[in-house]
Image (cartoon, rainbow, N blue to C red; front, side):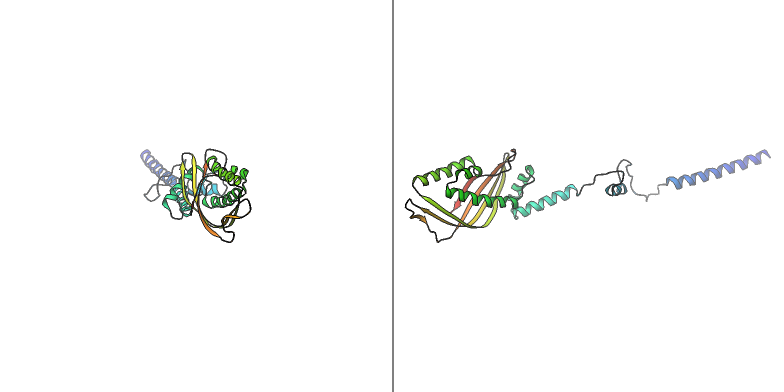
Length: 236
């Protein structure tokens, strides 16, 4: 009789143990080789990132694009700026590395304005304007030419009909100084008159195509965002 009750107890405990095992499997799950890789509990998964992006309690900062995409985009931008010139693209890359705001479109807009201002100031002898746009070395050359012209009693009539084209042809870093050379193709009417008002050189009725190469520079370690004209040369 006692042995019969003991046998029944064993069966009962076995049934209870089997029930508990099934319940634990339902609650905890079991690995069968198809459940996917291990996920770090301290690293948010896709669901947590989605909740954070939607304004959930667990905030996870998500980048707009990964580093590779950002690099490819920057390379495309620079290639477009350089017009396919690999050497020029490398120079623009070097400048943008220290000045991310640099872009050729804005630079050329400023370059065109500077070109017109310098030509006008040189023709009229406006030294103050030239001081704000030229490097000391270039300024000395311009002032010397103006002084010689004025001492000879000559006047200069320089009419900029228009800038037909302006392209960046060179860009590089010289230590902390960014250097950019622009090729200007312009139409001008240049006339020099003597003290009596007679034409000494040039033709007031002739529009001349002029090609100039102007190099601008800016020290990227300085807070001044302005570029100065540091060199000029023309193709006759």
